[in-house]
Image 1: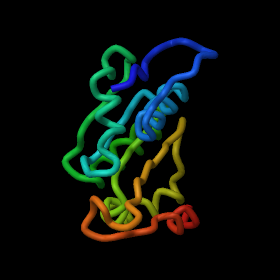
Image 2 (image 1 turned 120 degrees about the vertical axis):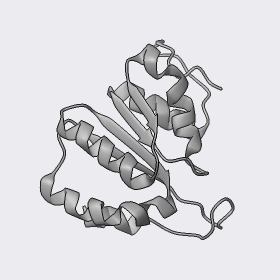
Image 3 (image 1 turned 180 degrees about the vertical axis):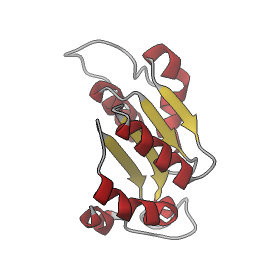
Image 4 (image 1 turned 90 degrees about the vertical axis):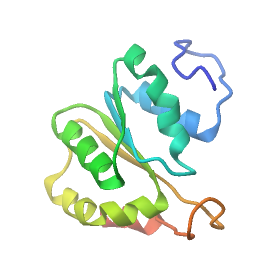
Length: 136
């Protein structure tokens, strides 16, 4: 596992994609991270969880995608930068909440990381979630 919590501005770090997402979240100042485990997105929380206490962030594996995203949204509405990650099928689970969140808005910042699985290598089906960004 990479040392994503390293504080070395101007240096080059070799990271896997999900580790880079975790690092970007740390650099953006997140204080709250949630996820529901599922390949190909599991490594994001797998990278954040072990360093959460050291980096002064709250990190949790949630019981499902909806709980994860609603908790991250609540953190954002409480002015804490938040991230929630899941695989593509999880967007189907959060869809009802997601389409209504646009009317409420978010507070400090909220990032939803959705990891699609082109070719269905690790998921039960192939799904392209890019059009969902147009909802918001």
